[in-house]
Image (cartoon, rainbow, N blue to C red):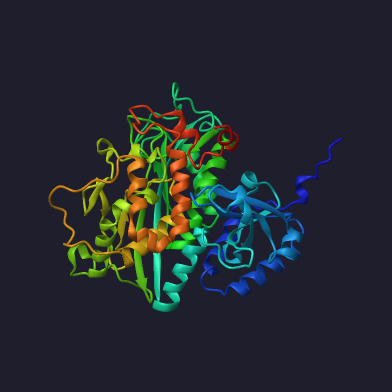
Length: 478
């Protein structure tokens, strides 16, 4: 007996229509009031009987992505009183303070492709609140949202970001959970930068991803094989910091699900394979005030303003103590290897890709800085909060930044990065003692599962205990 409902009872939207819906939603996110957006989407959900489920998404301290599926009618009736057990989320509350609230952000409404999410679903991001409905201190999405909202309301400043997120495609489903250091990952392609046959598996995957991102309302720019074999990168246009962080999370989720549909795994480990280039998440940042890019100065050095150069100086000055946020896993410190264009030098340059910060060619609209030393497994909300807070409120270097002479290096191991993060006064000021304690506890826990001397072979422990590799049963058996 088939007890499943026919799939045609639930909403399945063609990609072309998805794009129209998501572009319209994108264009009103930061221009239409939250109240009006909530009213509009509530009305839509009440009318559209083929929607059965609303998925609420949030991220924990380390950036691990969580999704809760709510019955549509229940969510509409109970949106102001949704709770969950925070003590079951690693790094969130202790058992004695387990109840947390989850509040939909109606301005983050997305329609989703049925072939990746199932029919009859829509998704929204959510913020985490305490029992008394105040902002939960360890919800970094809320932290970033409040920070950027205050910047705009009080100073007319917008924090703008474009992210270049690299990853690998490897053979087999759940390849990370089943990783064995004796065998390693099996790559699907032997090509390199821009090099792939039009219909080889990597190119097919990139093409399929581009179609999905376009349907989700992303402003696609380009997608291509990266330098390493089986490596990919897809670029989409800049957005305000909170929206970009949401997009990074959606991008990685879609990449993973699409790869799984094709019998493969999308891997965002910074260095999954030794001997070839690792994956980064280059963060292109600019700041606009009342619509004008204040990073640009036609007469300034590198055509950047004094404000931009000070932003760079503060970032470099605090590079050591914020490195654990930018490079958040044991595996990330394999990527900071100068033999493979590693951006591990604490300096700024227009041309040297080994520099932590690069100044790309730009004009009055596109002037920006590129922070290159970020791993693709960083929590995007915490990352962007830290980078903008540091660039705008950190301490300036004693002397002007320069491209000349030898540069200090970023930490070479997660243990070194943990020590610098723990002793840093500035990160304590902007994150608070509770968040510092929780984040360090997570990082020390995973660091203890791998040898401090990483050696020349990727270890099973640094993969299967990685914070983005969902392997709860294994954690519980450690």
